[in-house]
Length: 353
Image (cartoon, rainbow, N blue to C red; front, side, top):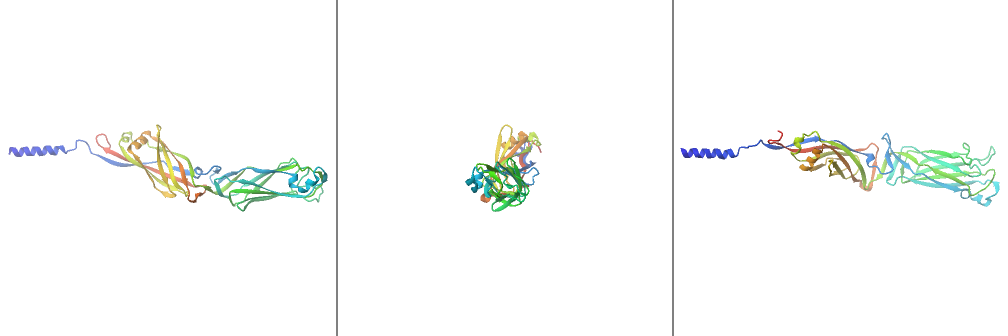
């Protein structure tokens, strides 16, 4: 009987060693909604191309160009009578100027705008009205702007409607057509000046024609995108909603993203998390269309993020398009929706249940 009692007590002692002395602990997964990061079309445009103020079009400015031509160049017959007071000879003169689109803007569709030209001269006669008689023949100036074989703008001024004496600055507006353009613009100017009244011929006199800087609007643009730099885009990530007592219990986690990418580009963006005391950098793979990548974090990294409270996240990097070219529309935006997944140890004497 005594021996049996000892065995029972021994069994109870062994059982007592297996009874937990602390409340149980386990892991829970928490989801913290993040902020939306947007990469607008303006963030991927090359230098020299922008989005209009109302967001409906692209804009680019065509550089100025021009030429100065002497009377001797324009009127070969005038060279033989240089310095003489003679009947002004007739002449036709054609000159081509060229101006270009920004280097990384490969092609575009114009929506309609205008080119502006400025004409001046110091000739001893009016090239449009060199004859004073009422029935005297009038001259004209023809303008044609073309790009990649398409006529962008065409117009003229005539001596029937416009006098052009020396010293006058004559402005000419050429409305553009809604056409596709690429590379550069050829601006062809043809001056026809008929025979006129006797004048002193000076072949060193000049005529100047300038194409002024012109802003053009475009409904779509094709840009060079072999290595497309995405401008830094920032958003705030508010992590202050998590109880500070739980921060030390975060074990691991991930930033899960749903990406809607209308641009036909892929590559890797860098996400820089500004912690105040330093920066945490993570790589984000980006694919064309819809994708749902996930970025893993260690417990220590997440604890640093959560301790910062509000974190600025900056996205930027290099993306590329198949074939090296990308066609863009003004209203396109890449959207990155984020959700922070946290694995938290709860329970125990100091935990949450």
